[in-house]
Structure formats: structure tokens, C-alpha cells
Image (tube, rainbow, N blue to C red):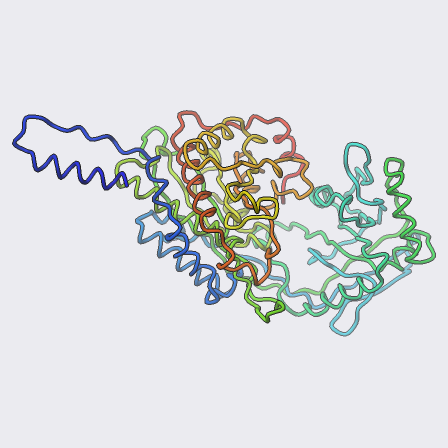
Length: 539
């Protein structure tokens, strides 16, 4: 709207060239362009990004290649600068794709004698199931870690974990999975989970599911990290009857009573070695899968600040084609996760380019970063953060956008909200800029519900912002919360709340603009966050 007014005034001034009076036009401001982000523009992009043609955009598949081509063509048309490989918009990287043929598990006692030997093969299911990781041979003694609790009042987990297996009675509410992951990072051989001890069929179903995946490409990992000889610790599930025997119990039914006793007196438990060891061996073939991030650059206008960069990120991958739902649909379109963030970036970039062409571009530079491999374990953002195009010490902040197109149950009566993760738990200066941006534009309810370093959901570590946060870069994560269609074929365009998506994108635009234009870059000043990133770095 303001651009049209400028044009009219220029025309009027030109028509009165014989007059002695001149008209001084107001200078355009970067903050005048947020309303160029519209429902129509977002809908146009998302209808394509989340279409069946893109086949769920799984990393390494043809569908994400189609999405990449669409996004890069949009940036090319806008006039952003390609800063990827060989003058393209893509930063390519290799993924290791292990094809597991079989697993072998051997338990020995303190004398080294074999007491249980079992396997998971296409023909048989045994007493263990590898549910995550475990693509390397791993051996070690077993420590019983109770319910896996780790908090201020009780700690069931050992301190010395190098080359040890931690066996825990898994409880969805009490087991601290984040603390277990930290033990993996500190050199543990892996985790042995005792699950469904009161449901004998649960283990069998899990074994059959894993068995069906043998011989197919499994979990992807970054090839360059494999080259550095990092070990993939295993998360193994154990048959409850065998777990009971290892713990000196008669059968799985005794584990139920054991769980209740531990819940009744959690602070009295101490982790203990159980005098058994587990050897986990895997028969694996390794393939290489090609993947890429998308990198589009808008140079800042201030000679003194343009070497500093604000990274605006989202992931454009989703989970691809999978198990059919009740309607028979097998394509997981990922309209909200993270089609909404993807088009949010595209439309923010378009608005910022419009501002730049009007002489009101950002003072600092802005990198629009679409990462792949998020659904595979934040792989694309990990690759970028380890191979940054612009130095990490010149990266003033990361604004990450993942799921901003829906409304969760808690906000059905008030759609003008957004969950903010990061900000004040990292940097008071970044939080102030965000709140100023909100007051200047859409006045959304900035919910702090998940903005907690002790949040059991661990959302502050579960999207791509974390790979910047672990390196000390302050971040803001915009998120609409979870919903019933998360990672299902029903996460489709027809469920998107378009007005909410537009308002949130306008806020993201203005927040990015304020970070890019502030005189002083925001500093990480929350000591608790600094300590968390040092002790819980994501590997």
C-alpha cells in the first residue's frame, strides 16, 4: 500500500515541474513491508510444496528433489544471491545409508561364559530389538539404571558410563530420555530398554516391525562424521522375560511390582552393575545418499554490519510415503511440518527483497536456509553448522521456523498465538527485539509454555535451531504446537489456518528485520543455557 502512495506522489511531483515548490517524499522503512506477506501468497506456495506430486519430500528421494527445484526457482526469480556449491542455491552433502542385514546379541556372565545368544534376522526374532542407532558393533558391561530418572530429587543413572550399557525400566513420564542421550554422548555403549513389561505382545510386535525393515536402508547419518570413526551407540529393547532373569526375578510379572516399588521410593535407588555383559554385533552394508540444503542470500546495506548474518531457517523435508491411514492415503504431505515454515521463509524473503529494491533493505545480511534431513535427526542443519558458509562467529542469531500453520487444542478459542522457544532463556536482548517486533505488528500471544530448559518435551533441542544453539548462537524458534495430524497423511493443506500463518510470518519478517537492523548484536547472557549447551551438546 505504501509503495503505491510513493508512486502517486512521484507522478504528482513530476507533473508540477514548473512549480517552485518541491515535495519531500518519506523514506521507505524495512518495517513498512510486512503486510506484503499475504494469505494468497502463502497459499500459492504451500499448495504446491505439500502436494502429492512432491511425495512427502523425504530426504534422499525424488520428491524432495522436486521441492528443492521449486524453492530454488522461486529464489532465482526474486533475485536473491545463490551462495551454494559452484554458484548454485544448493549446499550438497553426503549421507551414510546403512543397510542392516541382521543383528546378533550375546550375553556373557562375569566369568565370560555365554548365557544367552540370540539374533534378529529375516527368518527369526530373538530376545532383543534394535530400535535406534546400533549400526556399529558395541560391547560392554550392563548397569541397571532403575527407571532412568534424573532430576533434582532422584538420579537412577550412573556417572561412569564409558563402554557400559544402561538398562532401564522405561516409563514414558519418568524416564529422562534426554539424560540417556547425554550418556550416549559421553561414551556409553548404549541403552537397553525394558518396555511393555505388562504387555507381552508389545515386544513381539516391535520385533516384527524391525524384522520387516531388515535389508532396507535404515537410519541416515552424516558421512563425514562416520569418516571420523564416531560410534553409533545402540538403543536396544529387551524381551521382558530375559530382563527379569538378568535382574534375578522369576518372570516379567515381577517387573510390574519392581516398577511400583521404584516409583514409591525413587530417591533410594542407586545404579548398580548386574555382572552381565552384552555384545551387540551387526551385519551392515553402507550406501551413500546425496542430499542438499538450500542457501539464498540477501546482502546487508550497511558497510559496517553487512559481514554479520542473521540465519532464517526451516526444513523442507518430511517423512515421505509410508503406512496408509484409514482412508488408504500413503503420502505424508507435511503441510504444517514443515511446509508452513518453508513457505514462511519464501514469503519473508520476497517481502525483504521488495524492501531492498525500495532502498529499505536490512543493514545486516540475511541467509535464507532450508535444510533437509531434519526428520532424520537434524542432519542438514548439523552439516551447515559444521560447514558454515558464513562464519559462526559472524552469525548473530538463528530464527528457526518449524510448524506455524496450525492451531493446537489449547488455542482453539484464540488462534492469535505462537509458541516461542529460545529468546529469553538464551538472550535477553534477543527477547526484547522479538517483543518489540510483536508490538509493532500483529500483537500475538507469545506463549512461553515450552520455553523451559527442563521441558520434558525438549522442544528447545528438537529442531534445527539446536545446531546453532550448541555453538553459542542465540536463537528464536517459532512453533504452533503439536496436533493430531503430526507425522500422518492427514497433515494436509486443507487443515492450514491461513490467517494465523500469515500473521506469524509477518512477525517472523519483522523480528528478522529488527535483528538485522539493531546497532548491537544480541548476546547469549543466560548462564544456565551456556552450561546446558556445554554439558548436553548434540553429537
